[in-house]
Length: 92
Image 1 (tube, rainbow, N blue to C red):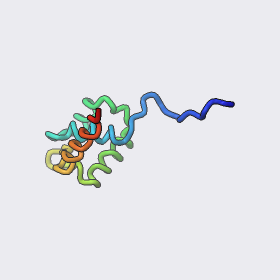
Image 2: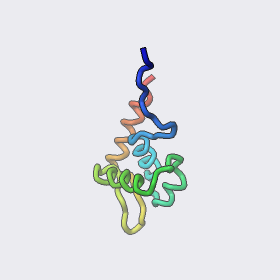
Image 3: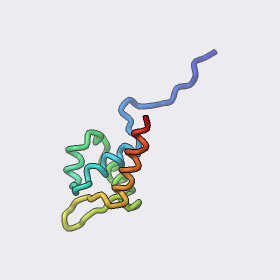
Image 4: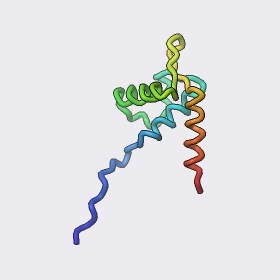
């Protein structure tokens, strides 16, 4: 009659989709790495986590890195992803 095993959750743990949504939202009009790190509250992320997240978004073609402007920009596909994410989160 022991207690059910609890999931091991960190109180400040943020799921991957939340990270992606925050990055894509901030990059709609273009944002540098510095802009992102200073404006997104979830950036208790390590530099490596940040790089992996942005690399995955670029690989999925949701985010584009403009070499000339040194800025990340949300792609059209990324905008569609955000719209779908908003639809699913507004289920009430």
